[in-house]
Length: 69
Image (cartoon, rainbow, N blue to C red; front, side):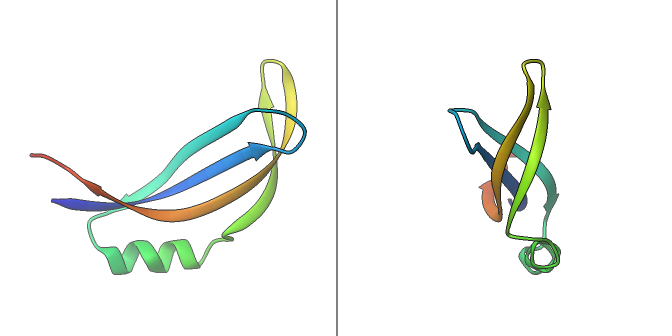
């Protein structure tokens, strides 16, 4: 079975941190695409960490995954 996950990848502007976050997953590719298209594909975000806030440039997309049952 395939699922379609909306994933965000955040890269620190001034540094080396990279954060990956799964936001939502769908069994239907069309629904996943519609959900992802309603959101910003590229955006800036400040992520709070134990070392303090970090400025990040983020990208979002749909990834196809195989799921074994």
